[in-house]
Each structure stands twice: as structure tokens, then as C-alpha cells.
Image: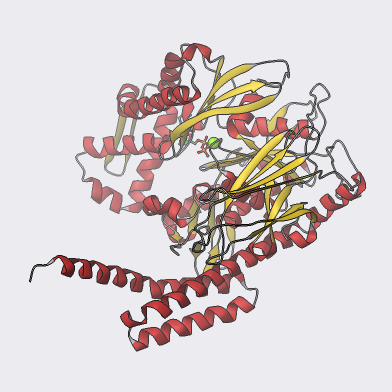
Length: 618
Ligand code: ADP
Ligand code: MG
């Protein structure tokens, strides 16, 4: 087990290469580094501000803008302006169905479990690609400000992010040309920024309260031996500073005796009021009243009135804190420190209520919207080996994972994970009646398994015959302190089980590990692009198979013309599946999907009317 740093220019091992820390936020993103004085510092390139709004605009001429400039297009060109993409990372359409109206851009409904896509103009983007555009911008700003190439980063994610959301974040980094050394939980980073958890001898239980632009979460962490364990998380992914702004706008609408629907229909006015509301909210830090006018609308509000407006929202966050404590099995007196994170914790009432609840002074010495990035930079510095005072625990030098559809590597234990560690994921079959499942274990950073190193292969036998997608196969990896990897596969419905053990470091030299890391960096972008084509193909093939099955079974419910048209779309999809144009594949899937969706609905109606007939008395 070793930690390896590589100088990209020379290919040699290097200790002092700069690694940045990135907070990829829902509302704002930013990047930080450790300055020559060894202090974490946020990057403010050309005085454009530290916070880069997480907004991407696509111009007609193919030009892409990110940040403040893109934010302006939210009013003038909402269809081509993507915001809050973090909400979509690693999610399927099913995950976000309930709040699809939230997005002003087009989120593709392909009615499957596969990851969502966004359509802008005639192009399809995955949230990974969109996030990579934000990361690219941050990389460019860091390079410009620091006058040095930036190729390696630590990126933060919310503690509640699942595996697929973390993997998507990694992929976004890769696509932006960044070697993502580690994905760190936001509360962990915030804690590091305050120096909590840096001393391996310290044992502490802390609460991290994070109120951002549109999301709220609270995490209870246990810190022991330099390891951060998330005991519980709670929150509301639709509660944040935006709600405070909206509450102020509603208040002005009422005070001016306007009709809300009319104001909101006037995009420009609504946006101006929202901006004024945000400005007023911030002004309450040093004044007790705002008095202004936009057109004919009086924008007057006192701090007292503001606090009254937002009180229910703030109280809701306190309820979440209570629940988080309960889930962690702790009471308030067991919390040693409370850390405030997120721009919205600058609001005095928020601070007051949180410190009242926890019965202590909260940490607010650092800028709450910078603290996560600062902590990520510290984590990066630790990984770079620049902090001799901190003992770096043993880490896995290469990722460990299994082969999935299309020959892709699905990472289960990412490289640089602390050892011992365990991780797992659930899989299913792709063929009806499949009774055996091949499990091939690989080591390496490339997206295609054929470029990685095979460690083991075994078969889970005796899965009872079920339709494709029904079996639930849990695959768990357990890497112990001696470097032995135990792989366990269990089919949950039947209890069928199989286990193997390997030693990943056996038969591989440090030089080979280094070479594998080098190759993964040189091929990162091609790899992710290839992966995306393969994933599109797998999705397309599943679509073809589903539709063909449907046609076979339900031809009676369709007209001849409908059958012919469906077949034509299937043929068109098959044609592009033979190629490697991701956009064309997505387009063909979308067309076929749009055309056939009403059939399924019709079938449902028929089924219902049959059922009704069965019940009627004649
Ligand atoms: P996220 O983590 O969701 O990307 P941030 O932590 O950057 O977001 O928080 C953004 C929110 O913080 C916005 O709603 C913004 O209005 C709010 N905010 C920023 N500064 C202040 C301030 N001084 N007072 C109150 N709210 C603020
Ligand atoms: Mg944040």
C-alpha cells in the first residue's frame, strides 16, 4: 500500500505538486489551494469573485459560458441555461420525477432507470458533462490565478450522496481533465477547515449545519483516529436561501397590493425583485431596514419583518437537527462542536436558532460559503504528503471494481480509500431466466476493464430463474488491513452465495502501479467519452429489446401503421447503435420512446376497461 504522486511532465514521482480542493455546489462552486505560507486560500481569479455560480449557458453559436455571466441568461434565455445540475448528478429520471417542474431546461423523460439527460438545442448532455464544464472553468481559473497547470483535485460531495452520485462526480472531474484523488464529504471538509479532526489522537462528535442556496443538510460526525464517520444526516433538498428571497418578494407583492401571478409572469420584474430581495437579506447584517423602489414597486422591509417571514423555515431546519441527533442515538450534550456552513448561515436568525438549539457558540469564524473548499484544499495537502505532522493511513493505490455491461469497469472501492474499508453495490441480471452470473474483479483506473488488471473471476450459480432485472445481487468488497480483498456475492431473493479472496498487491510492482496511474491520466478524457458511448449503447439495446418484446405481445392493440412506424424507429435506432455517436443514439432512443409511450398508456386503459367490464352486472 503506497500513496503515489506523479509529475505529469516528467512522469516521475513528485511530492510537492499542487492539488486543489473544489467545492462543487448546487448554487455556487469554488476552488481553493494551500498557499506558500501553508494556509488554505480560496482562489479569486482576476477579481471576478471567489464564488462561481454553478450555471452553464449554451449560446447559439456553440459558445459556452459558466458562472456569473451565465447566470444572467437565466432570465433572458432560460431554455439554454442550466442551473442546479448537482441535483441531477447520478440520478435517474425516476429519482427526480416529482420535481421536474423545478427545471426550466429540458430534462429527458425516457421512463427508464438509466441516468437522466438534458437536452439543450439539438444536443444531449449528461449531468456529468455539465458538471465537468463547471469544473473546467474552476480549473482554468485556478491555472490562470496560480500560473501553473492544475491536474489533480479533491472534490467534495454532500454526506448523503450515494455511490452513483459520487461516481458521477468523479467522472465529471475526469472529463474536466482532473485526476480526482479523493471525493470528500462536505461536512468532513468543513471540519478540517476548522482544524477539527487533524489531530489523530482526538475523539470528537460534531454537528455540521449546512444551509446553502436551495438545499439544507445537517450531519453528525464522529471523529476518531483521524477517521470521520457519518453517524447520521438529515435535511431538506428543497430548503435554502432562495426560500428567504422568495418570502421577501411575496411580502413586497402583498404590501404593494399586487397580484402575484401577474408579477411572476413579468420575468424581468420578478427577477429584479428577487435580486433586490437577496441584496436586502444580505444587508441585514449591518442595517435594520431596507427602503428602495423598483419601478412602481416599493421594496421596504425591516429586519424584524424579515425574521418573522423566515422563522418557519429556520424552525424546520431545527427539527431536522433534532431528527439527526435522534438517528445518531445522541443527545445535545454529546455534541462537542457545531460548524456553520453555507452562505445562508450568515443570516443572524439562523445562527441564533442553531446556537440556542445546541446550547453553545457555533463555529462561524470562517466564511461559511468558503469553508468546504478550504477544507478540501487541506485534504488535498494531506494526500500530497505535505503535512508531515499528519500520519497518512494506508490507502489503496488502485481502484477495485467489477466488470459490468459493455465491458465497463464499475469501481467499488476507489483508489486512495483508507484501509481497512468495505463497500458494496447491488446488481441484477440482464437476461430473462438467467441462472448464473459471472463476476469478474479488476484493479485499475481505466474505464474499460480490458485496460485494467484482472484479479479474479467467479460465477454465482443457482440463481432461481426470474425475469431480467428481478434478481437482487449484492456484491460486497472487504479490504482488510493486511491487504486481503474478500469479495462476496449474494442473491438476496434466494440467498445463493459465493465468496472469493485475493491479494490485490500481489504480483504488481510500484513501477507498474505508477504506470497504470499515468496511463489513466493520459487517457482520462477518451475513457470517459468511450464509457458514455458504451452506456448509451447498452441503454439503446435494452430499449430495442423492450420494444420488440412489446410488439410481439401486444400487436393487437396497435394499428398497422403504428407497428410499421415503431419498427422503422427500431431499425433507425439499431443503425446508430452500430456506430459510436452518443448524441445520435440518445436522439434515436428519445424518438422511439416519445412515439411508443402512448401505447403503454393505451394498454393500461384497456386493462382497466376490461376490469370494469368484468365487474359490471348485465
Ligand atoms: P450552495 O452550497 O447551495 O452552492 P452557498 O453556500 O454558496 O450555496 O449559499 C448560497 C446562498 O447563500 C444564497 O441563497 C445566498 O443568497 C446566501 N447568502 C450569501 N451571502 C449571504 C448573506 N450575507 N446573508 C444571507 N444569505 C447569504
Ligand atoms: Mg454548499
